Image (cartoon, rainbow, N blue to C red):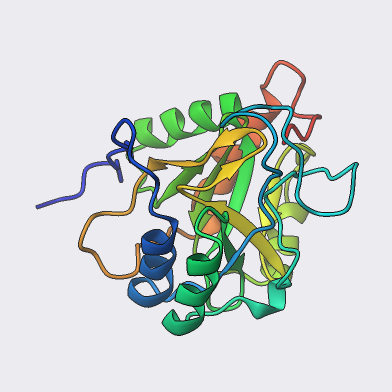
Length: 227
């Protein structure tokens, strides 16, 4: 059966059911061959979703509270199920971080409003889309691995690239569902197909024009990063 426009059903958590971070991390590492590691997480103060919660790292001015590597560091990302089980057994609510680049997926992220606009345009063009990760403030399109040289040549040809676009390539990372971060719950806007092998990913060249245009036409001209 033909996959229509790369649409994915959204992951919806049953009311009162605790998100299964360990299961999601194992699926990434063992079924999809994606290297993962736990994020630093948030402090325990306040209720779930409370914006007063801060990052569990020592930096009081942390720019991405809860949603970055700390201990272990990014280089510890692994596909080893034994280590993944150990990490999330000891820290069951730790955010799931994908180490991007190399043989792993890369990603392009942009403000949520611009992301919705870009996906609508890609759908209108009948463009096949891979998985899309969403937070309340930003959406991230997963794409096939690219090198810094490829990305540099691609962006050099553009008249303008909004600073609100972020490129998660070699040495980068991306927070995956069902993590909880300072901005709120991380979810799949376009979820990988159930029962599939490693999810199909588009080339960055296929989607970057729509992402640049959507960010440039945002109310602020795409000049703000907006975590």
